Length: 115
Length: 110
Image (cartoon, rainbow over the protein chains, first blue to last red):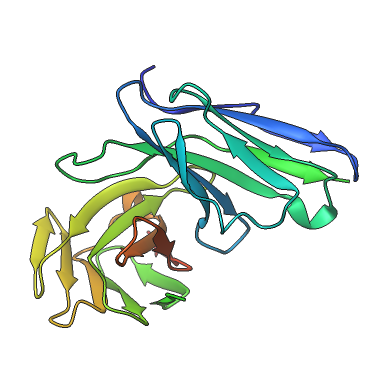
């Protein structure tokens, strides 16, 4: 499968715990996005990378959220001290800068439940 | 900041009827994209519009970008049960940050 993959697909955690999600983009894609989606809403932009550079992170929901893309390939999203309000689907998407259609390819998402 | 409003939130149609969803941005857009998300699935890219007044067709789907590049619409002719899902518009302004609308959920009754 050459699409975007995310791991884990589901995560259940207790309030106060830290969680980390991984995203593997399509191999030749140099741009990677993280979104949060809650029920009945569209994807909400969190941050994005171009290669290993994080070009926008002001939309991360709080200082408990951080993301990395150390070698310009896979990325991780960490949430520290989780709260019940963090329960949501976390989506990753990748795209090719200056590609013909500028389309984003989304992964299947990681569903987070905070108890 | 940039806001993208999408209406209606839900639309029930009988199979064979037409469907339209509308997207309005608070600011002028560089481009607008449309995505479809099936129940339990992830968003899948449909199309990107860039030019003022642009109209693009994909089989039974017609996409329009307004002259002022602040609004867009998606029209489906003669809906089928396979069209079921939520349709999102995503607008980009001067930055590369896409702002998604809330989506329109299409329910097709056979």
